Image 1 (cartoon, rainbow over the protein chains, first blue to last red):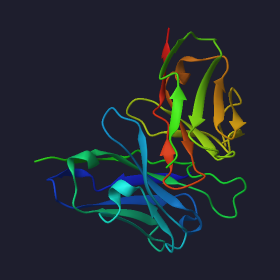
Image 2 (image 1 turned 180 degrees about the vertical axis):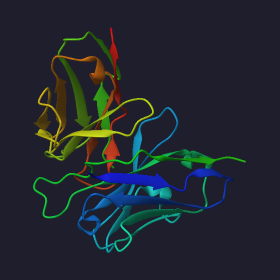
Image 3 (image 1 turned 45 degrees about the horizontal axis):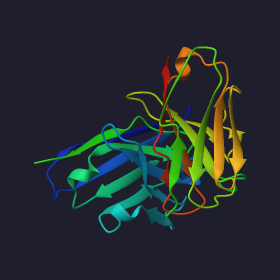
Length: 123
Length: 107
């Protein structure tokens, strides 16, 4: 059974840092693209970042470029999101999601999702 | 950046009804369109990808269609568990983007 379990969320002051983790199990983690998607309280879904199987390609939404870093450790079956210079508008539930295992035809970005971890940026 | 617009933003329907939600992209996205269902306090669930392909385990009451800029999600024979918020998402280019969501409520 595919499982994605996020951790690392919490309350942090503006300008602070936080590192989110996503522990994956039930599939060959190193063979899949992985993503982070967030949802501000009462709002819709927003894609944050994704990362290729081997970590050689990473993509970010403009609002987090230069502040957030997505990474993965395939030996530990884990996905990470290092969040620096946090702002109030980063307050959200952060979901990790599994993507395609290439070659995929047709492609998709997300099939399985974790339950999310809440990040609150406030003084 | 590609903007995704869903209509309606909310929809009331009865158990047993068939409903259709529309998603429009601000530019041609071919068939690179996915649909998700989300219930309050829960993670999204992936329903459809490539505009019309069902994710594994998703019942055939859900169907998607469209290509280019206009897409639809149809849910037939609504059951109580289908009342949720639905999102579309384009993945032809970065940044990926979602529609604002359509809240399907019981009439």
